[in-house]
Image 1 (tube, rainbow over the protein chains, first blue to last red):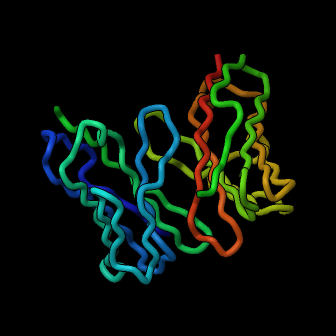
Image 2 (cartoon, rainbow over the protein chains, first blue to last red):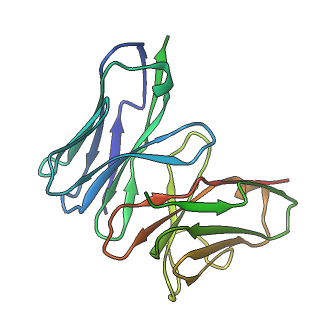
Image 3 (spheres, rainbow over the protein chains, first blue to last red):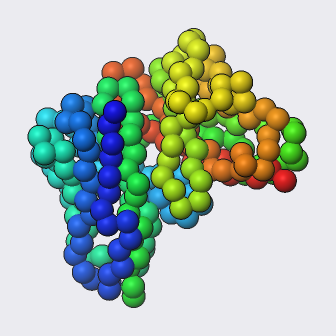
Length: 110
Length: 115
């Protein structure tokens, strides 16, 4: 069974710093991987979707990479802002089943 | 982009009553819908997967007689929490995918509180 792990569980950084969130998965047979953010008490907002054939995707200050063979993905956030404070989740799609990571709670300090 | 809505966004009910949560895909046909629950400070847990016109497939440990899922059309799935108890209080989120589309579109979630 696919297991998805995110490190670190929590992260606190001063405003303006660049940061990296990590996601690892145990089974490399995936269709795609998605990164989401979740604000307290809210649903999920999709940030980036990487297909299994892709190495990275970029959207604004966000860049996500995928190394399927090693079972890793990273989400890079450039020039962090207080508004980036949220929980970030990665999810792996293995076909028609999605597996979520445990999440990284990010706090950006003004 | 594809939009998924949920109704209601918040519901408070008394113990022993049943609650229905609707999940709708507004601008695409959702061949598969997923229901998740999330306890405070925990990740999403998949409860069940439903394909239009078929019975839902429940994850291990999820009581199918308690969490009734119906996916009668390509735009609507419902989750009914029967005989709700305080331990059922949670955040319930649905998501949907279209045929041949492996991206997952999420609803805004429903906060259920059972008193």
